[in-house]
Length: 175
Figure 1 (spheres, one colour):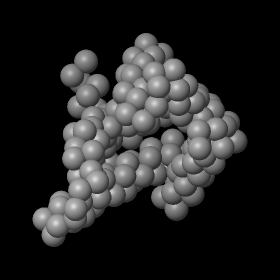
Figure 2 (tube, rainbow, N blue to C red):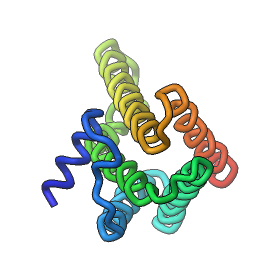
Figure 3 (cartoon, rainbow, N blue to C red):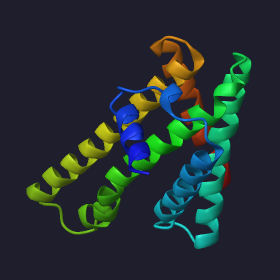
């Protein structure tokens, strides 16, 4: 198992490609379950357990469907298991890194009188979250670029399309 963590970490550092992930439906199933649980836990801060389950399932379904769709357009469906596994494995690592910040969010944004120290901490918190999200987008661009055999600009457009689709669907269903 450690070898897979190291592989996904290498992809997070843009040193490995989705093609380096073994074609394993069992591994895909494991990282899919792991992402479902991480998503459920993260969504449960703001929603009931049932809604959190639906949100986690929906985000995974959108990502799987979108990835399947873009790979099918290029005639590269044989890469789906490895590509989706790479997306999920790296997402799990990044979400575990950002997890402590999610736990600290209520502390930084409580409704108390604002002082300069709290404002500085809030700014550092928001900057850290922004940087981690930019990193995640870079990882996704890398994965889609390699999986689709396209340049990074096209990979960025594909990533933006997926994130936009996520935002549109979530805002319609859960706002």
